[in-house]
Amino acid sequence: MIDNRTKSTIQTLIWINVIMYAVSLFFSRGLHFTMNPLTALAPSIEALIFLGASGTMALAHTQDWGSIFTANWLHGSLLHILFNMMALHTLAPLTIKEFGRDRMLSIYILSGAGGFFISCLGGVPVTIGASAGLCGLIGALFYFGWSRGGSWGKMVFDQTKSWIFSLVLIGLILPNINNWGHGGGFAAGFILACLFGYEERRSSGKIDMLVCAGLSVFTCFLLFRSIFQGMILILQ
Image (cartoon, rainbow, N blue to C red; front, side, top):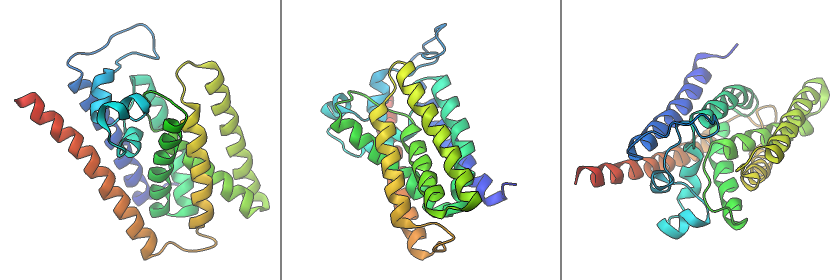
């Protein structure tokens, strides 16, 4: 059973993603209708870059490394956001249970940034999506299952292995999948989980709360800045 605080946290994350997706469609000045489910209701590349997409081409236009934080909240189609939000709804409760809400949010934000940083190093031109942060949660749970051991740890470990297998399979089959972001996010999540620890080893404290609050405020500032700048341009 998911408690109300956990439910509220997940709903907030989903709503931020939905709002940013809606804003990206609005900034695109027209909807992209297609029979291809992978590209249905896709925002324009220009709108995504303006709102904070990352990658080598995006950075060449914006020169803003803050995009490694904002790209985690943007999506390229209706199917893209639906798939990622379903994954978030599955992964977040378990991560909150084992790491606490503050550490889960910090891992999600930082591993997303780590995944997009690695994507830039890997030469990916334009990249977006919550999957880098989601892979960070998988990496954190993989570490938890491996480190904790026991019957519960083994169950979590085996489950994360199935998720990893699915990610690798999707990366090999579907076009335009950012495997650099997935791998970088997973590695960042694993490392952060090792550094932060989990609830059974160390209960969440004030430091975790402050780190989470700082990262959340910084990320929201970057997102609001992009939206505000876009509104100013539209109204001129």
